[in-house]
Length: 158
Image (cartoon, rainbow, N blue to C red; front, side):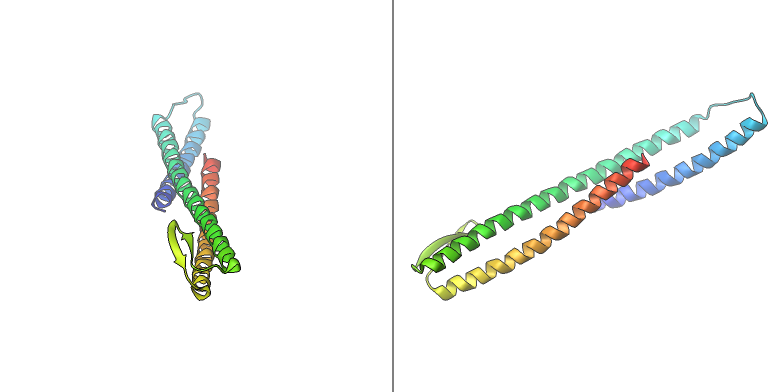
């Protein structure tokens, strides 16, 4: 988010500079039309354009960095969801077989289930975690889409 805020500020500054430069160009165009053939190059204007381009590139790099972070978060959450689905399936299979005690792996740790009630409680807890991971994944995907839109906006401005 920090990169996004910096990028937004830079885009606002760059846009303001571009608007000011555009007004200056219009003024120069009026002067040139009034006093043809005297045409002068405006080095300050060119330097400002380079500064704006650099600011836009910086903003784009910040948004792309944020996109990579959010993509990694989405990937991590999806991996956790997959592991939870496998754990839930393993516990359900153990409940179906009914051979207690049974040891299952939950979130990388072996857990010994000695009763059906214990299996049901563990299953309930894992299903709650699965719902939480699902909500997290949706929020992360929305953030990733938002970053993609911001990147597209920066590309369009460039």
